[in-house]
Length: 511
Image (cartoon, rainbow, N blue to C red; front, side):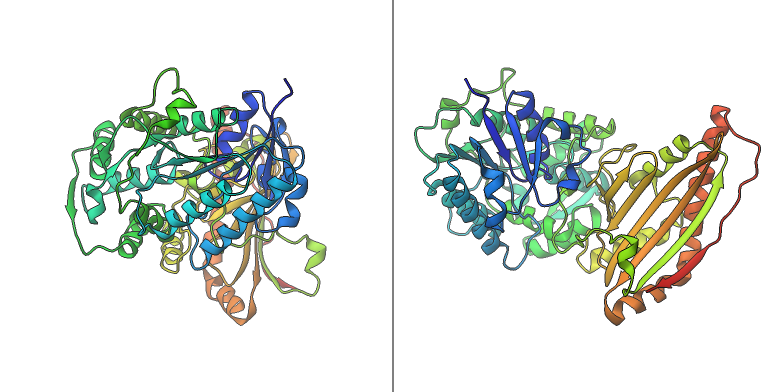
């Protein structure tokens, strides 16, 4: 039998980033579609798959990606979209259906949302349902798997439960806290998705999938508290707490942005319970059985505590975040750019210095003026940005495309260069980068550069308004990074006796 060829869309997202390597492990020839292939350049499974550039909203970019493919996995959905996202998703689904027909794809597999049979679905569930119908009517055999709350390390649903329960001994919630939910562990979702590629499919249709437990959302938080060793939480139900207000509240007390929090809440306003079990007729359950909610929480907490989070909800870039890569220096001619550049040598080898730089952000902090970073994050949340609390996927290692608080890793040359692109709301594009250079035995140089491309007058005023803080923030960052590396060298017994040399500091404008 010929090797089955699978195309995974949404490969930088939470589910897609886990599915692609599992398909490769199962023996499939895997191709992944990404708008920015560079984001997948150094994921652990990059060498096991073919990475191609494409955008579902651009039909011309899909032909090459869909060619010679047997199965297409449709795993794209905007949980943060506003305004016309439903129309955008409709067009994307139609483009996928057309490309699949033109290229002779044998099957489409779509992961949709579990929902009741109701005309009053939330905008996001309504859009996911419409996408499923478009694919089913495409003429290509289509399997639509409908899942509710997905529990796993790094999933948006789990992170919302985790942070709400950890931080609030007493919490106010909307009435949906009493709705019935049938959560499913991410490992079981992946089981169904992998098996769906070759499962018998007499006709195109939807299949509900869920875990073994049907519980109320409030109970999910209480069970989490019990497993996490917390006291039982007190939950006060407020019938006047609208999804918008609840989303804002979630944005204040969790890393979940208000727009995403609102989308999650709106999808919970109705019961989300499996209404039929016909999936059992085409895909056997895992050999060990479906994962209980308690076990799913235990597994997610263990992976979170051990720093083994494979993918996170923040893996895909948020809507309206800056997406253009940093222009190379020669292209700056004729453009206004502001930079803050600093260099310093330290008594640590390049490897030790790099380990400190790569561990920056998240719970490890930013090595300078924590209050200023927190305030900037809160201000970003107020204007609808991602804020400063997304953290990092792994406490020690970064990959291209990883979210890092309100930054994203744009480029990483391991051991020598780390460049971050800002995803906070700013009137322009902002980057922060570090370059490491060895300068002798057990000695290295750190070059730090902050870059800002202003948009119009607002951008220039923004730069000059924060200029007084740069001396504190960026100088402190440089001092503390090199100081930490030096202390690690002292502890390892490799410190040189040379005194540190501080380079010139400049805040300059180039054009």
